[in-house]
Amino acid sequence: DIQMTQSPSSLSASIGDRVTITCRASQTISQYLNWYQQRPGEAPKLLIFGASGLQSGAPSRFSGSGSGTDFTLTISSLQPEDFATYYCQQTYSPRYTFGRGTKLEIK
Amino acid sequence: QVQLVQSGAVLKRPGASVRLSCKASGYTFTTYGISWVRQAPGQGLEWLGWISTFNGNTLYALNVQGRVTMTTDTSTSTAYLELRGLRSDDTAIYYCARDSKMTKGMAFFDDWGQGTLVSVSS
Image (cartoon, rainbow over all chains, first blue to last red; front, side, top):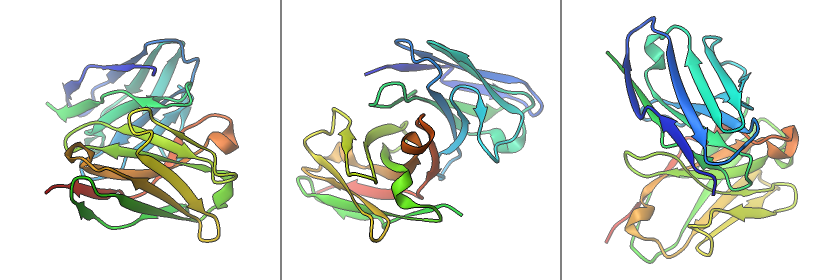
């Protein structure tokens, strides 16, 4: 299986901050990389597909970049509703795998 | 609007089997696959497998292969997950998700069910 390594595992930030989360694949995955947001007690929600495509309804402050093995999710200006856990997912291999998550907390 | 509605929480004994359902609405069921994902308490997301709603082809994660069966009933737009030989570490919330691979040529999960809590305890 392709291993997905997210960093950091947790992050404290303030409203209005710019935040970047990284995800590294154990082998090249082209741009088959998605990002999800999960708030406590809720199902995950798709934010970014194909490394950089913004899902319909996702706020434009979210952006994704990268290809090959290294990817980033950037939130340009943190809002209160952005405090959640973020997961990357590769779908290059037919057996998909997720990163272990990055918990974004209020400083 | 797209909806995936899952069956209710269950409590099972170790060694038992469980069958979960996921009823889809708001789109043509046979144009999107269904993936199943679980989340153990306080843990991350684990993909369990995928089923084509068009022809019933399946692909399972290696760590549950042999214990899991995914099926669909296209007449009711419902997907099912059966897990056998339950163990305590199968305790988790189980989600179904609409998988875009069949339609978009790239897989992502753009809609999710609300989740079903499966508790395994003696």
